[in-house]
Length: 437
Image 1 (tube, helix red, strand yellow):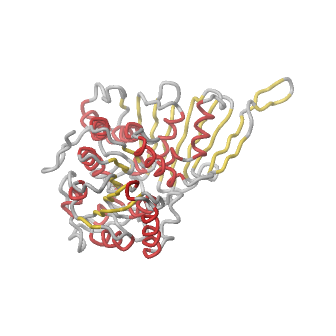
Image 2 (cartoon, one colour):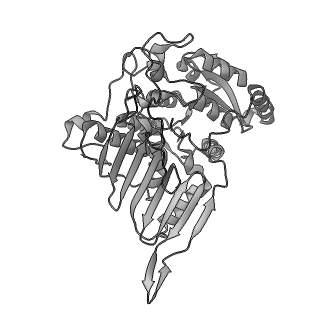
Image 3 (cartoon, helix red, strand yellow):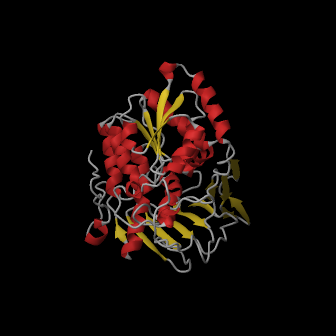
């Protein structure tokens, strides 16, 4: 199985009763005029985690819960005594809901965000922002047109040690950055997630509504992907997500682009395949993507057939500068200086440094969002930023799927001179769903 994302290990620490008690006491602590009404759409593993983060703030009152899978909805109801809905549009209609928290499968993110903005709601939406690049641009357009605050769940931007590392890179402390490497490694050989047959959906699941704007497909347990001991496997099917490239690559490349002043790639090459894992996933079990930026190159590597890390790290980012190397993950960062010869000695070009993570970036990410709602400012992971980081990863998947290098014009958001690749920037929605700003 894939190595679990750090920072989520405490997911089940709170009992349903304990979480309900926390919510009740904190809701009472906020004056009614200061209360922010929250509607939660998507109550799977990540949705419950995100909701609990909002409940850490006294001003937040969860007033509506929505999911198309009844067991998820029931679990959310046990934690928070809010009204429950099957159809997310009923949540958008409520005047006492100010904020929409979207933690659905990826293929719903764009449509729900746009419709929430149109309904006058601010939005916290999980990453990746979308499954297709044009969807992400529509999300940006909606946020701007309806003057909404939209925060993307790339929560590392609220990590203090990430901010410090980014400042060091931007200040030139590592010298000139010429290369960056990022990676996720794990080993689920050979069975992976298995090969369950298509069949009937489980009781309490509205499969047609779950599919929504995605193509109509028979129900398969791995397409739905919910399990007691794993993150949902929908993310390994092209209709709904983009595999590890978009699930984890967005987190890593978001930091790369932040540190390089929101740089955008000009060309992307991705190679890989499903070489060994024998489950029914569609995305590759091994992938290497190369992103060409104006002043440096960056790689993202994922393998699910061998978990040997780099210098003992199963995931992370390394910035390679002329004066030093910086490694960073969610536990902290470390700087390793390069040396140069001065006479008969080798002298470090810069200092060594180790800096540990000192904050809960998930909590602080919600705090930033709530602050920006009150101030009507753009948050640290504004939808434009989240869209650009997601688009970088989506482009790698396009390169992999067409089997060749593609060029990218970031200002116009187009792939020139390659009609097949350019066509993969967009998908028409299944009726009756439409994405209109």
